[in-house]
Image (cartoon, rainbow over all chains, first blue to last red; front, side, top):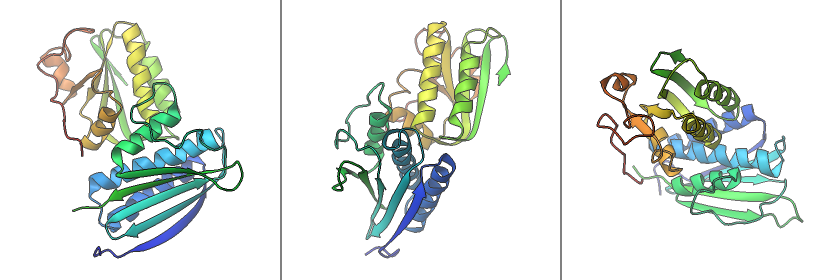
Length: 140
Length: 129
């Protein structure tokens, strides 16, 4: 058990760029409170920003839509799950290599390189929505 | 943006994200295509705190514009966490990274534009944390 405990909270937001900036900073600060090294907190911030940008540009077609962000610390594992209700991803695979033209793949590639675990799931609620869970083990 | 006969220097401070990337893109485009300097476009990243995938794409577009005009794009002093991101997308393999703007006065980073890498070039970070 981490000295920082185990806990979870949920943020409801929309994919407005200013809100995205604020939320990625909040989650990075939360990671630091949970014991993240500065480098890890910066990678978590990047991953949250990329996941939210993907939701804005792809799920909501460059528009504003609702997001639920679930932040958890379970022992040393810090996780963020970003759920949208927009257009679902066509593939739930995290690309190993950077695609040259597809910004969705590019962002996912970056997330996959800086986080320890990444899981993408399509919503079970009809044909809308995608969730991406991103986890980082916080080690001093 | 600073202009000299040898280079244009773009100073990037703070954050490049969804909010600021359009302004950064416009600045890079106008600088890379400007006729007021020769040879080099240096992008000073020493005071950059955050860059997202969109911002990295702006740098890549700037690199392509420079290459089309026979110019070299040189990154200056990216903080380690920024340089790591640029490594992930293989951008640091495609351009020169130097420690300071003054490196240009010690000799051309990366050799002459389109040339071989020079001795003033900053060492690569090989960590894969």
